[in-house]
Each structure stands twice: as structure tokens, then as C-alpha cells.
Image (cartoon, rainbow, N blue to C red; front, side, top):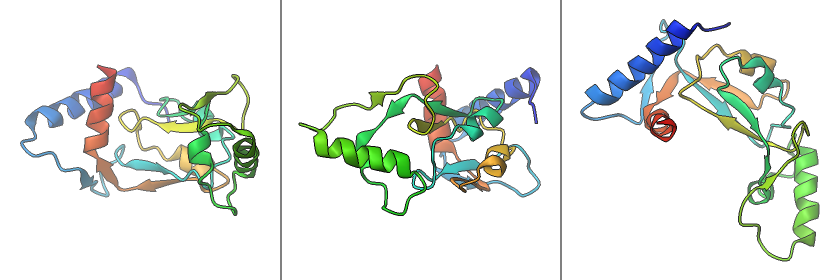
Length: 158
């Protein structure tokens, strides 16, 4: 499902209008069932193997495979995770480290299975194709909108 430039512009305008008009911005608001194109994709890092299928499916670049290996977050993965390669690599590196890494480590471009999934909620058109394509059920969809996070993203982009 491809979204046109005009639809993207309308969406950005609507977000800006809500931000300016809202006296009190609720953090989470439910999306009416009949209103298509709004909702929140949720990523479960414990189930994700960073294969990149969802990123290739997302034409609006709302989901990206960031080229970073975050040892701190990967050390917290449970033993029964789908992300076995990343968890084992993190465990191996943890045994070798001299000190805690300050920042995520860059991953060479094109190296799948190690990176980190990034979500841009302000770009998501709620087509749910990423949820459909994920074999590991690492993505799910909520019929709600997190305005606080969306507005924070918009501020960062400006």
C-alpha cells in the first residue's frame, strides 16, 4: 500500500494542527476502528532477529534497520529469545569486554541479523504490512496513537 505525497502532506498537516490546537495533549488516545491509517506498531526486541523483512516492506521508511549493535540492550535478552545470534554474540562480547561500552557499536552495512530496529511513529501509515510479513511475531499493532512520542519525533525532525 503506497501513500502519495499529498496524503503524506495531509498527515503531517493534521499532526501539526493537533499539536497546535491541543490545550492538553493526551499521551495515548484510542483510534476509532473506522479510522484507517492511524495506530501504533509495537516492536518486541526479544522476538526480533533483525532480518530486515519489515524494513523492506515499509515504503514510507517508518521502520528502519539501524546499523548499530547495542550491547547493553542485547545483554538483557531472555535466554529463550528468537534473536539467538545477537544474544549469543552479546554474551560472548560481554565475557571479553574490559569496560561497559558507552555507545552502540556500528555494524557494517548490509550485515543482517545484528542491527537494531528503529520505528518512526510519525511516518507510519498503519498499513500493517510489517506486522503481516514478520515471521517471528516481533511486530504487533495497537489501535491507539501515542501523541507524545509522535510530537517528540516531529520536533527532532524540525
